[in-house]
Length: 261
Image 1 (cartoon, rainbow, N blue to C red):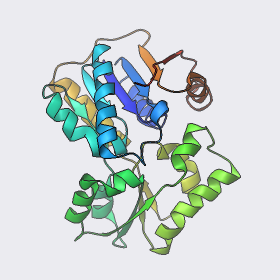
Image 2: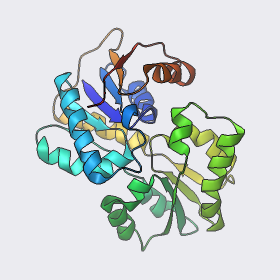
Image 3: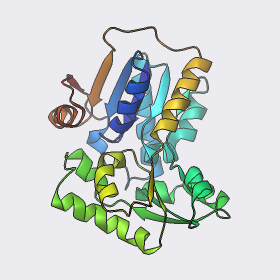
Image 4: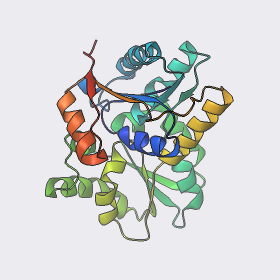
C-alpha cells in the first residue's frame, strides 16, 4: 500500500496521476488540513509533523511513503529517510532542471511556497543550474488557500494568480515551474494568463515514475484490486475534503477524520 500525505488537498493532483497510471495499487491519502498551510511553518514543526504522519501511515500498512508536498519534502524528507532507512520514500521537488536545460531565453520562473523557496534543497539545486539559466522565484501567495476552498475559477482566483505571475513575466521567462502540489489545480488559470510560448512544468509524472521504480525495486507492488482500494483521511474538516473529491475529482468516497496530535 502507498501512504501519501500533503498539508491539505493539493497532493490529490499527484494522487490523480498516480492512480491513473497504477490503478491496481491501494493508496491511503492523508490531508493534514488541521495544520494547513505548511508554507509559513518552521522546519522543526514540519519534521515533527511528518514523523507523526509517517508513523500513522506505517501503522495502516503502508509499504511506501510518498510525500506529496514540496514544502514537507524540503523540510523533512532527509530526516524521514534517516529514521526509516528501509522504507522507500518518494518526495517532491520543483522540476527546475528540465526547465533550465530546455529554456531558449535563458530565464525560467519557479512558483512555490515561501518555505520551499527558502529551503536548502531548492537553493542548492538552483545554484547547480546557475550556468544554464537565470532562475526567478515567486511565492504563490494565496494559491494554497484557493485550492483548499475549491475556488479554482473565480475573479479572485484570477487576480491572485495574475499577481504572482506578473513578476515572472516581467523577467521574460519562457518556462514556469510549478513547485507546489496545490498549484496544478490552478494550471488552467495559469495557462490562461501566460503567453502561448511559455511552458508550464509539472513534476507529477516524474514522481509517479519514481514511485513505480521503487515499488518494483523493493518488491512491494500489490496484486490486482477490484475495485481499487483507496482511503482518504483528514486532520481537518471532512466535509471540505469530501466536497473537493466530489466537485474536482468526481469521487464519492468516505473521508475519515483523524484528530491532529
